[in-house]
Length: 152
Image 1 (cartoon, rainbow, N blue to C red):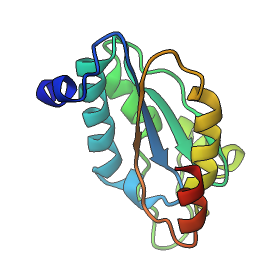
Image 2 (cartoon, rainbow, N blue to C red):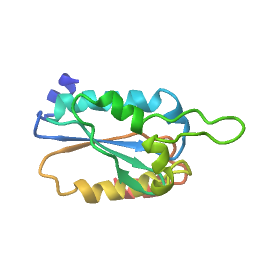
Image 3 (cartoon, rainbow, N blue to C red):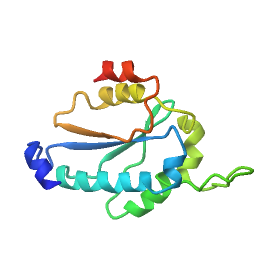
């Protein structure tokens, strides 16, 4: 990662890393995929940024998640990157899990729009004084191609 940072001419403390998680579907949060993605993003931020990455989640809309505090990565992952597996019959009891409790408010697990998330992030980071590396976790871009192309 340090080699990639040198090649890209990004300097630690003079760049920003942003992780954007796809909240359109539960599946990635029920397994290891999102946990591994968050850990990788933190390692990339460690090489490029002087602070942990900003983390956002998008579904019907895009929302900033609480900051990852130094030394509390595993606790953050347990709160914001893990969901219990959906039962075959009935509903899951996820009382106390902040991600599950925020699903309705954030419009999660009912599909997602990459283009809409990109628009919000461009507004948020477009005037940044330092280069911003945005790491998108994408599950599907079905029907979003022209919107994404426009944002790029």
